[in-house]
Image (cartoon, rainbow, N blue to C red):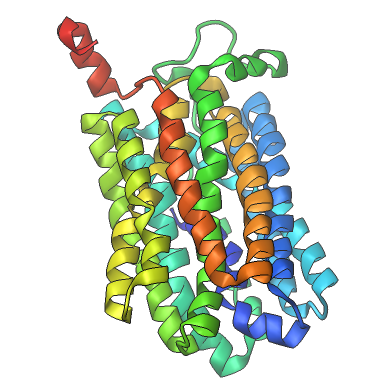
Length: 397
């Protein structure tokens, strides 16, 4: 939780501090989208190939330790960026080291969770950790530090938690045995690259790869352009903006536990569909709510869609493929989502914002949430509790 939460804290530091960074470096909305897209592009490919390497070598702990140290170093270097191009390069390289983190930490969760708590545990690692560290603490702390010391000093401070987390990985984590999990194939212990390609034949993997493009466009696009919309369009000050952004974090904390937990009981597919439709409320509330309290309520309820990340990126995938290739399968979904969502989707939202105004970026993210809910109808159910009931009750099949 600390590892992934801090990675997302750093990733969204750019958007949370965008009013300060863009003014000093002379950037426009499209360029902000390009900075985020550069990191996402690196994140996408490194996540897949790094996870594949960790699966094939069966050495996840050392790999995770190395990438945490390296991305923390480049987060520190962000404070030295003196131009738009330099900022893009630094964040791109940092993304190369952040990419494998999510698939690898979810493999630890898959290996050490009982089937009845798998969705909940994966939600705690992904959405709840992101909610607490990146979305709740992050905006308030980052803006306060930037107002007091400047945005450059704020990035210098990110090296400290990175070193602490790296030390905890070294001291605490145990290498997971992915061959001993229910769902792992029998046979040789060491996975192979050729066998890993079979994951792409699975319908749930393909569905998640498509769905992730729209969910991430909704999620990242909303988080990137909301601070600018609140400050430049709605007229809120930086502090007011930071507190509204913290509501995203509060929502992620609550829904990150509740949504995956509900999926353990009621099924992955219906829960994903319902909460993705509900997530349309977050960008629409930002556009239409009359005052900050109503905005906060809409954001909190609508951010329930963030709880499905643990499902389409982890639980459904881990339950659909040979678990020896769980990291690779999760990273495949992450890769398409980052390219289609964080690169193309966020960049498209930035272009729309420059052409038609910042409100158009939020309309775009609302549409992406609706499409994601429709795509989710293509899933087949994987929740162990639901499958067990279907075996005993033919009417539920």
